[in-house]
Image (cartoon, rainbow, N blue to C red; front, side, top):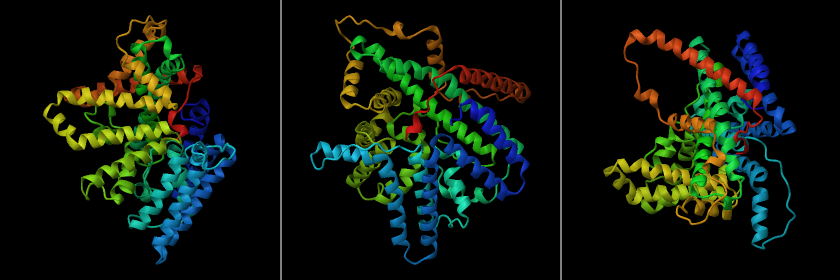
Length: 464
């Protein structure tokens, strides 16, 4: 079940919201949300919902042991190993066996293990819980059902954002559901739905069309159109999902931290990672980079730690070498910026975006194309600007007026215009509010029409 599906929008969500607002007691509200969350996951994953319950039970048990016994180092280690063991088995076991087979270390028949949706997310939620208890940032959760709700809460269960336990622990025990928060949640959800249905799906269809075409049939202009389309698709797809998740959480009284902050206006790769998938960046910073020593132990250790973090970041996204290459690519530019590039860019600010945006766009080639040789072929195609070869397909072969309009809107909305264009005169306040309501209603209706009529409705980050 996805947020932009008819079953979610017209059946699941209205029923859950109605039941939630009719119930007054916080314990009953939590039980209702827990049952709804388990149903939400089981709807698409069936029996694998038990895996999420097992993961929560492991963390509940070892969280208690870490908090109440003197052998906290032992139990935190075992708890982390068990969490990672589940993740490695379901997500990386086939990848490990395949690579060992290529190296001739062992020969085993390839086994197909179903990848549970969102396993990377709910595993990181469990690890956050254990580590926060170990560090004394949070008390252990006495109620197994409240912990299970934290891990399975349907707005963030299958594609994030990654909500650290200490950010939400108090909200599990008590929260305020106000009309203002509900209205803000609805507004945020509608914006996320529009990003997904009206922009990401449309541009995604264009990107898929180009990437599924024989690369020898088109030149560099089409190659750039394809990767720019994917660059916009993945942003509006994932940020749209995050907006919907944050909005849904607000409807139920929860406050999630932001996950995106206009990443494509970044002036460096370092800044990009403070704006893109912020919850993942913060997770790796707090639970891996800083424990490794961060930048406190000299330059060499800092560069080593950055490479480790970005290796893990790439691997977190998928059991494939293209994701590892993508991670190292970002780690490499982070190191280059620390070595000398940042100082140069600070003196020449006009070059910051001219440097950062192409570097980020190029990185998505390895994220989109899993086969390394095909990725290199596509990169070669992008930079083959001058060629005497006559190609069969050109930009006009893929673009129509509708695509041009959507592409233009998508690029413009990457810029935080609302921070630049501020209405300061209070006399316009009422008119502005009515305009916003009309705008939200309009894009909601258009989004619903798109959801009902379009068959193309993937969520890119579901596979992570």
